[in-house]
Figure (spheres, rainbow, N blue to C red):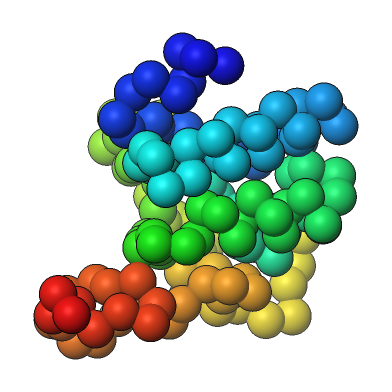
Length: 142
């Protein structure tokens, strides 16, 4: 555990790509708790906060982890196509978006939403040029 506590910034990529078992969830909680207010964590995930119970197999531990991660934090919600898919499209290895629109969907949907549906916990796209600040903070240093 000491190796994960030492860096000033710990980067965790693709959180939730695979679910954690009970031991993994407990160790991750201990890591987040140990770094809480002592070291920064940059975390990426394609899961909304509402889906984190399924990552850890327990909504209670997920809530405790999120409580520590989100306190003093800024969430940046990025929408759009994966850069990996964009590279494959440029190389001609994957159909272009307009080509896909002409094909019937493999699993027909009753509702089509541009850029995908908003999930619980995700914010609507920002329309102002104001700086990002954590909830409850004014951003003016006070």
